Image 1 (cartoon, one colour):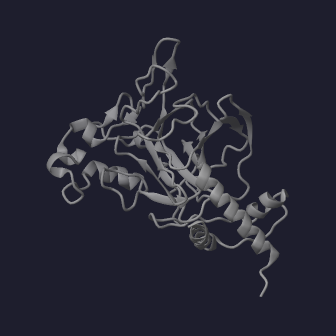
Image 2 (image 1 turned 45 degrees about the vertical axis):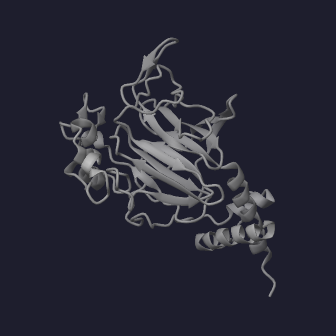
Image 3 (image 1 turned 135 degrees about the horizontal axis):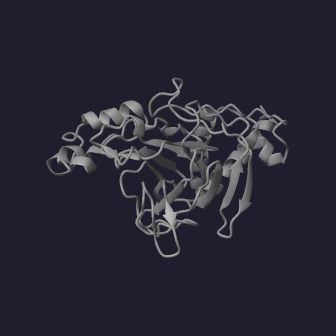
Length: 334
């Protein structure tokens, strides 16, 4: 029986995108929905390439996109209350100590909400949002264009408003972890408590977990906090406007400009375009992203608009197709 032309088109397009992203990685888009400027910081792990920037200013209502190569790993965070001059500068929260908008290989000073990534090289990406080093900003991570589970994760709740006094920083600018506040091995999962069996959730990490169930609350909080996706692009949103399920239907249009470093910056025309995690329809790390727009692959291949609908198979089919395509090509080249 001959396969429908639309299925063949979708399959070929998917295979092309799969191997393109396996070779060239993906993109990270930063979106600022806070009522103030955020200065994202970027730290590549040892052995990973430096991205186009290590830190930049992201005004309220704007976005900026960077490309990362396959195999890249590192972390992102948001800095607040920053003041920079030609010779020195600092931030109220998330400061990296560089004195500049660029962090230049330095990490965040706790407390800071962290987004951590490891991009696969033809396999799975791993990502999480961590509160192990404390919290300073609401943040969500959403995957698009990938296959597999690809669930949204992050912390939509403003923990600064409910932070216990013993963990509070300043006038409620950030919320420290119990490890940073007290230094006890049982809070830091160090010394005699340096294993999953001996380091258990504390009353403080449980408070973080209750407010942000998809985020890391302490060092060994892996089962409900690490997420995977294959060949995806990622959007990191600071201060997401509302906790609702991610949909790829009609993505938010942006007015963008290209920087000399190859990155893209733009302002959103729709203030409610990016949604958060925490919807009752998604629970646990095994949740599957609900993709409602089935036309974008065919539209991309034919150069047509979104109105020209060709029904491609479901995300479950693409997850199976991803594994099958990789197997077939590996056999052909071996």
